[in-house]
Structure formats: C-alpha cells, structure tokens
Image (cartoon, rainbow, N blue to C red; front, side):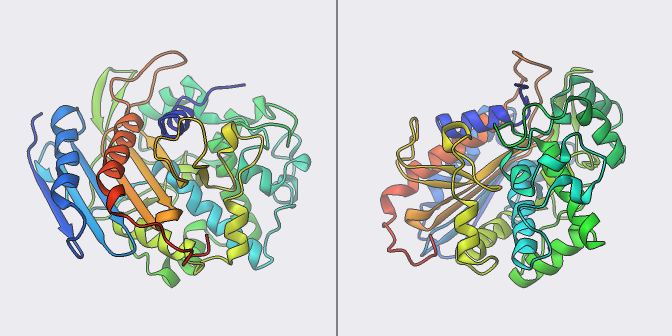
Length: 398
C-alpha cells in the first residue's frame, strides 16, 4: 500500500500521541480561560522552533479565546493576529464532506452513487466505487500527491493552475490500489474527485454551492472552497522548505488547485470554531447525518475515520487526551492545522502555524514537521484547560 508522505504522518502523529519571539497578541471574548498560559504556549513554540507564527482559538460552553504569536510575514515583520485567514490544508476534507452530505440530504446525490455515474470512463473500476467509499477512503483511488515527481512539478511552478486531467493522469495509472470497498488508503485525489462529481452533477462550482448551502446560512464569511485557495487580507504568509532547491520560500501566492476539495480551503480561527458549533449543534446537517459521519469505519486504522471526519475514541490506545475527539488535521507546504471537537466537554480547538515542509520521499524527514508542532500545541493547550472544564450533559446532538 502506498504511503502518503504529506498526510499519513499527520494521522499517525495526531492519533498516536494523538528567530527569537518577535511579536504576540491575544484577544478573549470573556477572559475566563487561562489566557496567559495559552499565549505562553504559542510564544514559546515560536521562540523555540523555526515556525514564524501561530494562531489558536478555543471555545468552551462558557468562554472563547483567541491568541496569536510571532510573524505573519518575515520580510515585512507583520505580526500574526488571531483574525487572519489561513489555509486549512486537509481540514478542507470535513468541509467537502459536509457539502456532499448536504447534497445527499437534498437528494441531489446518493452515497450509493458510483464514480462512473458522474465521471464516465475517467476512473478505472469507477462503477465499483461509491461516493461513500470516496468519503471514507475505501475506494482505492491512487493519490497523486504520493509521487515525488508530482512535488517536483509543484515546486518548479507553484502558481500553475492544474487541470482535472493533469491530476487524473497521475492518479489513474495506479488506480485502484485495491479492490474498491475492501481497504483503507488515505487519498487526496479521492476527495478531488468529490469536487468533480459535485460540479458535474449540479452545474455549479463547489465554492458557490458551499457559500450558498454552508457558509452564508452559518455566517462563516471568511471561509471558502475555491480551487486555487486564494487568501484574503488580513491573512498570513506561509513558508516551506523545498527539497528540490533546499531553500525556504513563501507560499502565500501559490496556486493550490492541485489539492482543491482535498486541501485548498481557507478560513479563520473564529470561523472554524463557529463551524464546529453549527455542525455539532445540528444547524447545518440533520443529527442522523452527523451521526453517520462520525461513525468509525472498521477498516480504518484504529477505526479512526468516518465520512470526512476523524474520530479518536476515548479508549483508543495511545489517546493521551483521555476523552473522545472528532475533527481532523492538515499539512500542506506552508501550513499545518488542527481542528478538534471534544464532545464530552463541548469544547473546540483550532490551531494553525505558518510553516510546514514536505518530506522528500519514503523514510526521509523534512527540516520542519508542522504536524508534530501543531499537535504539540494542541496537547499543551488541552492540559492547560481540561481541569477547568465540566462534563456536559448532552446539550448537543452528540
């Protein structure tokens, strides 16, 4: 089975354990969370690593806190602030999954529909692959981003606007990687196909549908699913080391069309906390739909994945949080993110840092592993706030 150098390390780190400081800022809605300790986590992370800047947002039933530390732009020395828009990387997948499930609720799509129904002749054995399989990574779609040659092309021309056919030409020669429906293989290209299917079925763009059905009703005004992953000011720059040139470059103006509905989404800390509120309060999807999304598939590693959402059960081996988590993490050149909801405490965390490097290949490690650093921030922040949280009595649908 192929290894996904960009995201499978993210899964393992998040679930298995799960430059001097130049500026910081914080804001609190109610100031009851330990703002000083939380801000210290961010400032020390920036001071002790090559991460230029970090953002964190936390929402409990009683309080909300946002903080930021370090630089959003190293060339201008612009400070990171909590309201800045960031690239989500693979936290885009929950957004895409929610849009897909909204269309399922509206009978526009069905989980039993096949890839062949919407993309005839484009995917080998597409008639055996259902939308549900794409959502839970059991379709066997070969992931284009596992190819080192793919990254060499991205790095050589980071503003290139990738076409569907260019992505498929990398993926389809190795698809399927197993008989569809018989295994689990995390696939960015599988989620890219969901975007193609949504647009083929509706005749509308993914981003316009997402705005119409998700962000506008939920007032998530700074969240989008554009193909290119464009950022709006105020936003943070991103930084990544390229194994092709062995230099650190800016990624703010990169074109992320190659990742699209798998990883080109953008948002803010506040929007992502609001998104969790709306989703897990049953305001976006019906409660039965959310329950289906958070029902772990037995074939996923440690039964840790449902439909677009990762689930870390309280009793899972290595769960140092001691309670259930629902959400996902992301890692792309220039960004690493964490978005997790703790249902027993009705508490959500969002974390973003603005540097992440991609490994050169199997067995190699990048100079900076943003997933490990952002996961460590999550762990430290949980340790700071957990003793002040009360077990909630099921006020939400979970």
